[in-house]
Length: 149
Image 1 (tube, helix red, strand yellow):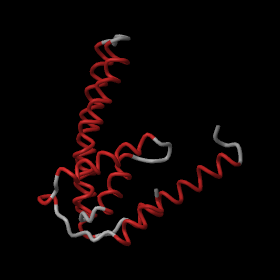
Image 2 (cartoon, helix red, strand yellow; image 1 turned 90 degrees about the horizontal axis):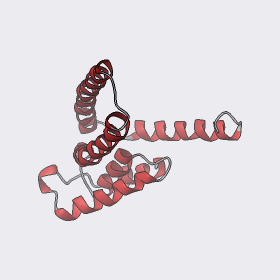
Image 3 (spheres, helix red, strand yellow; image 1 turned 120 degrees about the horizontal axis):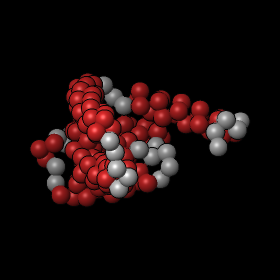
Image 4 (tube, helix red, strand yellow; image 1 turned 180 degrees about the vertical axis):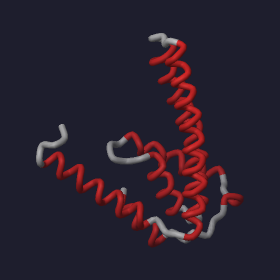
């Protein structure tokens, strides 16, 4: 994925804005989101990379990626909620913890996404390329050395 992001960063025209998105763009981004079922591929990484390939501005690609993630993440959360909370049953204190954790997650996710969109308006994606490469090397080394199973 780091290699694809490098290529997208190099050849992407970054001229298309959010207002110019078409149905075709949504379908392509949706297909890119499916790549996240493969190990090592993140949903946001695959969609942002696809957006750059499609010629989207960096911040537009990230915004579209995060908006596209809302239904997928919400549905996954609801399924997990049914499985872990409703089917198993939780106490009142566990409900309070769940609500507090959800609220905290929502606030900090919003703040991070706002920061990331501002960052990508002025900066390129190379920091994410280096992160992916470094993390990949650590995982492969851990597997090779038997640290990870």
